[in-house]
Image (tube, rainbow, N blue to C red; front, side):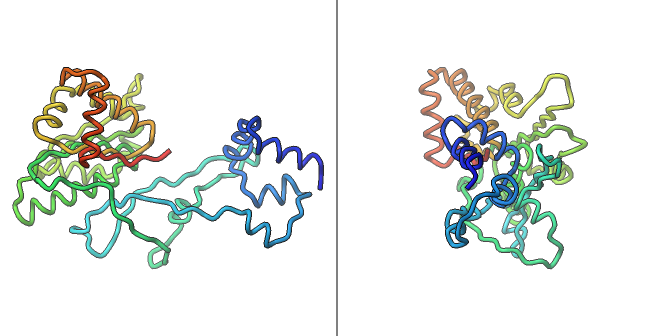
Length: 279
């Protein structure tokens, strides 16, 4: 009913108001309840209409971080609890799903569902797997290493090399699964472990930088030994790894950038280049 409220809502829902909407609503973590009870209190709408315009809560997808062969009756997930200070109130905003899960206790029941994974180990077990899983992107890579370790221990399977690129800000703060990764390396399951701790030196180092330094070795794994490449993590990291791989294929394979991209696209179609990314 208030003209100022109406104008504010129309402005932020327009193309011109996108920046304001992002700053005040998205980055301010302002929900519908706060809009109608604190900021635009003159809104009057029948309850059934209000329920119809409220968006449904979307499911949150987490990649399973355990092997069903090793843990047949349980599922492990790896997540970071989102916590950030709200600009307007100064209160701490917690991610809806990550905060909810973090507060669960042993014995609590939650609603979950499982869908098929996009990551598939090569049927030819002698083929290498090159993995990029910085931060919580380590989740499917942990499952892969558990599966290959189990197959190796149970049946003596001589699988191909497993190469992992892991990154985080600092080894003392968020080097998750450190003991497990080092154990996999000691037992021979993890052939190479390349670590990028971005804040431990003056110049930031990420997984794509380590990849670029191993161009010749990576090309041999990809081209000669038909390695599969798995990437999990942030969209920007995925794009940087994709770019670095195209550079390697172009230079080491002596082909144009366009042909290098086509080479990587062909790997993707064959299931040898799999990315699971989030923004």
